[in-house]
Amino acid sequence: MSLKSLQTTTKESIILKTVGLPNVNSGPDFFNAQLSIGTQMWAGNVEIHVKSSDWYAHHHESDAAYDNVILHVVWEHNMDVFRKDNTPIPTLELKNQVLPHTYNNYNSLLNQKLSWIPCETRIKEVDSFTVNHWLERLYLERLEGKYKAIETQLDESKQNWEAVLFWQLSKNFGLKVNGDAFLSVSKSIDFSVVRKSQHQTHHLEALFLGQAGLLDSEAQDRYLSELKSTFSFLKNKFSLSRTGVLPVQFFRLRPPNFPTIRLAQLAALYSRSSNLFSRIIEAQSLEQLYTVFEGATSRYWNTHYTFEKATKSTPKKLTKAFMNLLIINTIVPIKFAFNKFNCHSKKEDIVEIMRKIPLEHNSIVHKFHDLYAFGKTA
Image (tube, rainbow, N blue to C red; front, side):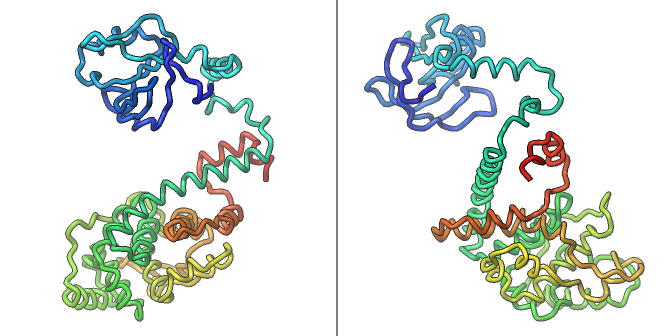
């Protein structure tokens, strides 16, 4: 089907300007589309049906939400459809616009017995070049989506890239369970406060753990008492508030992922990296990024996961697997956004970093890998 040769059922040319916005609620399928029909430019909504008669079967003729429909897109045109003023709604019939093999493939995928995804029986037929190109394109599209979120935070922070990096890192240090809570903690602390406190890990731990409500423990612990005292001083000095901070969770988390440990690791990262944003932007390889995250927490956490009891001494370093998650979900999107914001088109370093990161361990990646196509391209 060619978008350059579309016609209504009455042989008027259709030129699509914008498809509009998909509607996930009740009402027409697309809002605010723009298109010309014949010599007339239209702006309005688009409705999609299998047959034209579905318009009346669904009682759209009596629903005011459909008064602004400018194009009716159907597979089969079996009757004319009219507006309330008795003018016909232009109709685009797709049946004769779709190549037979495309339609047959659609029916085959629709009717086959489904194990996981419709194309799983044929995915092995795709050559490695096509798969690699597709994966690269998918990832760049994903980065474009993440860019929008970063752009919003950039506006919120008044163009402060370091603050945005701090927010993004905080969220991803919290993973799925505590991501939103950690983000709320980071946003409750002006980044200038983080910068002023970077010279002492102790101060950053007090800030992060205190704002997260993790210093409210009644445990009889000397280091906890020191952190409480430091946090009280910093809270008064910088007029900190916990309004809007979400509660952190321990439930169903393995000890290395406890919020106490992850916030202590975040504090350690910032205490040893006064120019963290610059180091990340300048890094051109995966190995250089790994060096950014190397290092352990303060000594206290070697023998603790919480304040309540001591444990066997274990340095709380970031694992390579966790570093990879941070690089995938924070560092690469930040580098991509920074380049895009500053009109730098170079993407080779970012793609090369992603190619060197091992496969993520999740069910979707494993299922695709089991379908052989991705194993074949390795």
